[in-house]
Length: 81
Image (cartoon, rainbow, N blue to C red; front, side, top):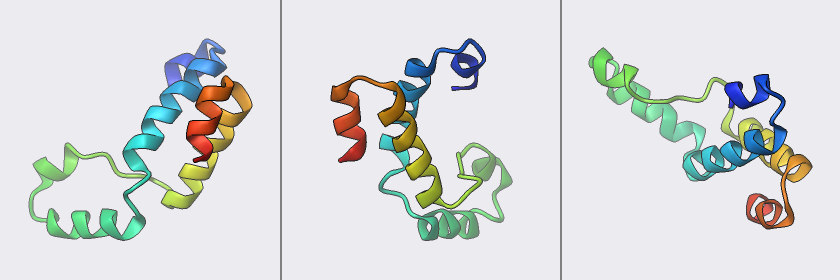
């Protein structure tokens, strides 16, 4: 996403955001916290996982807004749903 944003490819940033949205949508903050707690004694495994730096609701909203703003209708519908 950073690469496309650097090159002002807003539609591609939004499309990658849609993929990211598919991956994080069903994971809420409590699931991330339980995973961190479970793996706290295993730094190697913990380092291999992706964790959100902000609350999941905020990240999901930002990704949806970006898709709606920069993508075609087909992607907008998928993001909003």
